[in-house]
Length: 402
Image 1 (cartoon, rainbow, N blue to C red):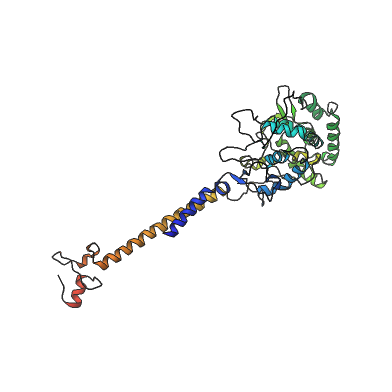
Image 2 (cartoon, one colour):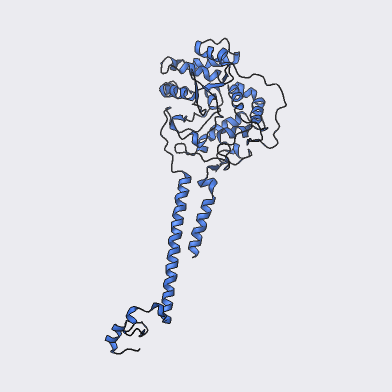
């Protein structure tokens, strides 16, 4: 009985470990991600593995680089960076728990210079607009302890116009409307791509490269446009061999879910682009992890919007080959333990009943007297210590006791 109770307790214990086995959340590994050890939350999504590595292991280098690049500009840099790579998970919330809009705006304001230097400023200005405000009573968003919002002020337009700046520059090679810094960075980037451009591997390569520098941008109707991930995937699929041949580190494809195509390699930005398990199940929307380098324009597109990645080097995504999910495994183990418990319980009851029968026979309990121990007149017969049958005993002794 003790064994049965032990098995039952194990089953109950396994069912209760929903955060690490059967649940959707998993504890952040502070060894792999030391920058995320004290950011106000301890659990992120239970991501599937990336190839032969755990998801957290696969993004650990990127988190370290990004956290290092912005550690001195804002007290909230680590929390903000970690919320982009390993967003907070709560069992009571369906999707990721994202930073409050005010936290994003504070980060962009505090880290404006390094963001501009790395070409990420416009991207984060746009991302902030996708977040919910802490002032919304129905909002559940992430805010660091002791956080102080920016003072009220008139928010200047910090994104370029798609119609008058970005599209003319990228569709007509008219860079006159771009700011000096953006124009210089774009021309330098395009110059680095000349060997690949000359190969004519993709008709979208130059346009896509241009939009990396000039988007996000704002349309006349107020929509924010961002370079499409699908365009990135097409360029990488067709030109990856050229990138490798000329040792060019092309930015990885950044998922922005869902894609609402606006044409010309641009899509409407509609959701904060963080990784989440349901977003990375489709191998067609999963970028590859870029080579780890310092934050620079060549890989600045990896800086944010970074998402897990299952594709192998070469830019071609591979079918999802993740191992059996922890939830399915836990359910199988629990099912096995329940069956084992039932078997042990039945065995215990059977043994108990057998013992009772043996004791009853020793006492001569009528309930356990065989039919063969009943004489023709209906009276029971007890013969010898072995309680032998009537006919058998007659044959042996030719007498019977009635």
